[in-house]
Length: 473
Ligand code: SAH
Ligand code: SF4
Ligand code: F3S
Image 1 (cartoon, rainbow, N blue to C red):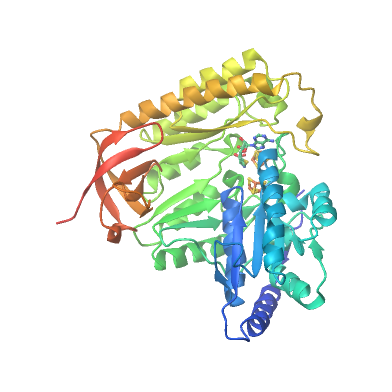
Image 2: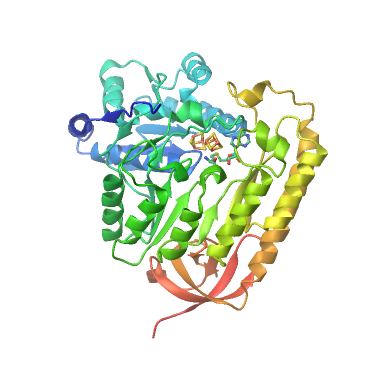
């Protein structure tokens, strides 16, 4: 049975924006512009959330700084997916002791996926007295209200109750950059892969209404964005909770119909729900990039079953074959976990052979990290960290070799590349992306940023391509 979809009424968001105006009056009263810093960990969803936090802060009158000693408000938006990310957050929040000492009125907020875990919220409460405000992802829509409480009461505020999640439209968003934009189409996850914390901290799957997504896409195109990435933990199940007859492929088709020269990308697609309809739609929609990030996690059927992934190796390979039939130039990237509990030499050999078979353009590899409260955390895990590291290094070497070989195949070809930014390094001062999302280093005038240009690839390595721009006459 579908769970109730909790939508925050527009009046409530309006009320939050009124609070922003109130805070504005207060913090700009002395004629000075206050400064805020938003520090983001984790995935693109978190990047998109941070853009909303910055959107609210901008309405409150804050400018932005990257220097924590200059900031009146610091927001640390955290990720819980692996232990390493959590350790970094604790280290960096701990270090804010110094900035708060130097700047006693400074307000420090910690939000995001980590704090939605009870043991973490407790730890922040007990051991990090410098933290004034803690709020989970489901409370982001009322950040202005929570911040005002901290300002008014001079008391610490904690808001990270258990929740299945909400959908909130109309939160202002301050996007980073003018070329690439994140567009969340859904939130949460229902898959409960046994290793993963995301469903516990991000709540159940909720899709935004297609008309809201399309309106936002139109606005982005009108603002000149050239590369729009549709975001969700599992975009292939978009719309299943809406009963409006629009699935993910239909949504792509509708966004493709928006006039303008731009690219549509998306992440992430779960192999369990990827359909031939999606691949055909990608092939038919001229604005849809020929790239799919299709995390396989493992090449071993035994491990995939224990991960609760709902597909096996044969099905994954079949999907890749169908996708490539629809788009022979498709770029395929993936995520792989090494050292899942009880992963044997044989299981790992299956992962290596799958990678050889698919030949991914790029692979994101992770050593399994135990997450409190997930089913995998209680599975017996007889292998040591050192043993896992040996496999990890082997896999990385394979990934790098294949990426290097694939990149070599681009040399001599001329491709359409979106010039997307400056690198700050000479002589390759510009960066761009191919349609399939591969990084291209370029040399040229920064006025080209935001434009599509023909580029001949002249050199390559494991991580990137190097190209020569053909300038229009
Ligand atoms: N929703 C996306 C993944 C989001 S998390 C999907 O299912 O494709 C991004 C990646 O982090 C995952 O694909 C997985 O490879 C990795 N990951 C998640 N939990 C992990 C854990 N406990 N240990 C190590 N890697 C993990
Ligand atoms: Fe985590 Fe699996 Fe959901 Fe991805 S699909 S967010 S790996 S539970
Ligand atoms: Fe991390 Fe939360 Fe994203 S756990 S990977 S920031 S959804």
